[in-house]
Image (cartoon, rainbow, N blue to C red; front, side, top):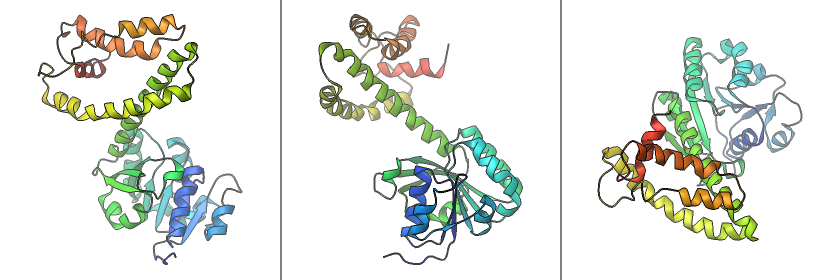
Length: 291
């Protein structure tokens, strides 16, 4: 049963994620006002106990804490810039996906307007909100983070990275980059085996445990990278890691070699620079120094 909380919260943006955040607040007993640019999306939340605001300004003026979960950075400023005066003295928690530079610019804008600003990156999909596997990353105002920690923890594990408002976004996008490249690798593999009559479902049964096991190597790679020595024993060399055979097999299967070819190019650049005997982790130097 929900326990009534004294902190009034407004959620701006009722897409799938914004609605999930708002629902968690309502269930926990927070007086919650909701607003969305297009009408109708608030109906389900109102049925749960939320108050629908006719305008974003009404929503902002109704609460001490304002959650922005909008389409992008441009949407955030389109909605909130005209309301800077109303937001002054309130806490703004922006969980819209933005770049680190955009997050830092928003923090400067907020500081100039007297708004306490906390930036967030959501490492979850909507149905995960409120579950243990949901993780939300924050940076910006330490005061807002600590004062409203109980509210933030409703959505998932809360991690604070410091006053630099861009750090949560940086972590968010860096983690997503790993996810998308991994997914692309899986899809490349599924495309490789498809001409042999192997379904993606069959391939996934083999790929999932293999890829899960391989994530155990992250810490070893990290230790090598942080140590700055790619010659330490026990590493797979760049020469041994040459992916020519995978590129060739992919071409033979009649599929694009773009995904695996990208990794091969990173390896080859380091081999060409005379580092073939060194460990695979050295390809991070190719990534750090783009052509």
